[in-house]
Image (cartoon, rainbow, N blue to C red; front, side, top):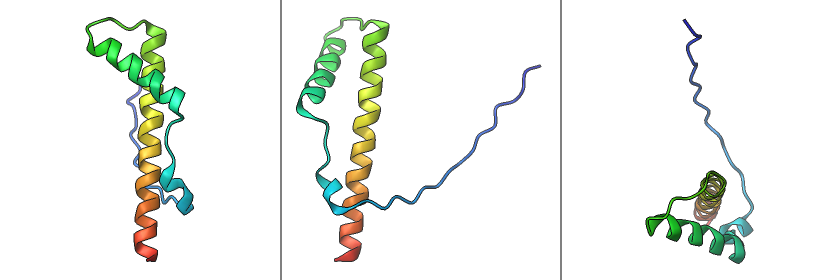
Length: 79
C-alpha cells in the first residue's frame, strides 16, 4: 500500500502595515478574472490554461482579502 498522507495544521501570525488595508488586484488583473468567471458562468468550458489562471487569480484575490482583513483588525486593536 502507498504511504498515508500526513496533514499538518499551521497557525500563522501576520503583521501587516496599515497601508495593506487598501490592497486590491490591479484593475487589468481583476478584469481578466471577471472575464474568465463570466465565460464559465455563461456555460462555456474554460481551457486547462484558463482554468488554472482563474484558480490562481481567485487564490490571489482571497489572499489579498485576508491581508486586508488582518490589516483592519490590527488597526482596530491599536485604535
